[in-house]
Length: 52
Image 1 (spheres, one colour):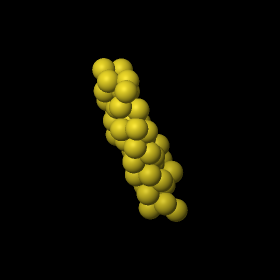
Image 2: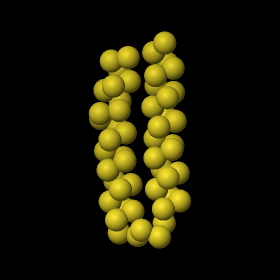
Image 3: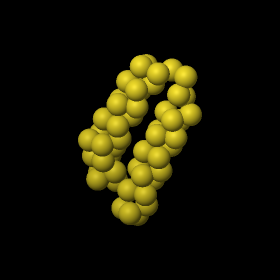
Image 4: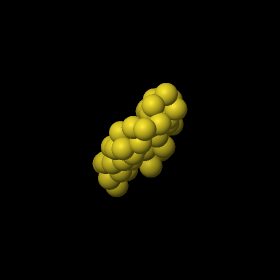
């Protein structure tokens, strides 16, 4: 579980922050933001499953 938390802190938060900045620049492209966040959370899920 430690590696999953590290992955979330080092990768997911950075990417979600970037997606949020892109959304702030172009608020009409909300679908892209949702897809990006969903992709990141799916990757996090894979990391969690790898550890179990």
